[in-house]
Image 1 (cartoon, rainbow, N blue to C red):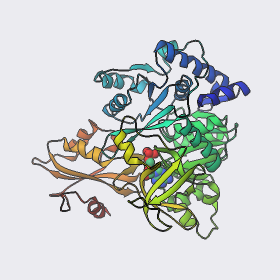
Image 2 (tube, protein in one colour; image 1 turned 120 degrees about the vertical axis):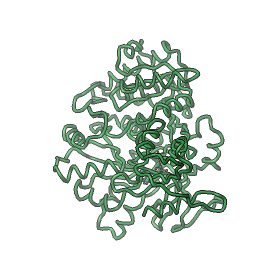
Image 3 (tube, rainbow, N blue to C red; image 1 turned 60 degrees about the vertical axis):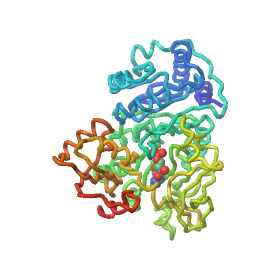
Image 4 (tube, rainbow, N blue to C red; image 1 turned 135 degrees about the horizontal axis):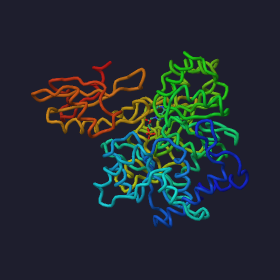
Length: 505
Ligand code: AMP
């Protein structure tokens, strides 16, 4: 079943209801959005000559067209490749090439960068600036929603791989349907009068949550800033009422600081769903003190989008419960549509209290990585997704994550794979050896630290910084460099990152 049918149905049943707002102003009704998605779909099929299954990338900041393009792509039976707009053009070029995207929609901030990045590609895709004259020229005679099979690709979700190469998790219409139904059952009830505020990137969690809000017939609200600004979030909550949003722990912290200092009205803010990285207990308690009972947690990953466990509001808010602190330190209980197990390396189920790898099975789990059967076979074994996260269940069924797949750094809610940063630094002639680890950081969750064995003449940190900026995204570059004479290694010559991390504590 095509997810775009939900748009079509709401447009028929309640045509005048606003589907998308920009700030506090209505942008398009359900009827208008459906008609325009249908016209865009026609253009994609007939003018760009795309066929079902073809991939269309979105390299865009949050904008109202994001919703229209995503839905137009699905309406046409095509697959979307949302790309993180904070990546380096070279990283974006890799994703475009890897996904074989035939067309790319870009916001103005990306149009020029994309033109440069795509000239390197064997088959440069068409680049269309969202909202431009050329964009509107693409619209054709509205077409009916193209029927697709449940397993048809809807969203290629690029996560970074431990090898530093991003991998595209293949998410089908059925995967996203399971995610949406699970969200409304386990995480948060949403009515047609509510809305989703996109303060986090729509290429990731926030964009995925467009789907349950669409299912509920609710509205999408795109902040005028196109990103996260705490004052704007509170102002829009007051303007709209019934506001839900997805926020990484870093964003929650900034909202709490703002609320504590300014005391804005919180009335319209219904739910903040946090996840994507660890939330410290002290931070959540303060968030509850300052902002009240508005929080729910999810644990998921691109391969099982937003859906492994959830800690619903009732658990978060039950401060009188004798195990409240343990519960909010956990990621909650399995969501209703999935089985979750904790296993040892041999695949044996571990009892409560024992730490192993978190495995998940259910309708939400991806079918594999795009064009990467080896990585798929490693992650998907016997019908289960091996998440790479380590955790343990307690006797009451709450899962606590002990560590992520060991070396991954999560800073400000974004995944940073050390290997990628290491490779970038090693390309500098002054760097002989390097190892990158995460240091706990009150603001960002973790901060990137590089241990560098330098060659003479020793490069300055600003030189290394500039070097990183030339090849990887800004947010991935180290916040600190430590020059050492050698790296600690085991007798196989492998760097002992645990020792490096211990040095930072
Ligand atoms: P991504 O695929 O980019 O969504 O990253 C997923 C990873 O983020 C997971 O495998 C976990 O390591 C981590 N993660 C997601 N949600 C949580 C959470 N609620 N608490 C702690 N870590 C999380």
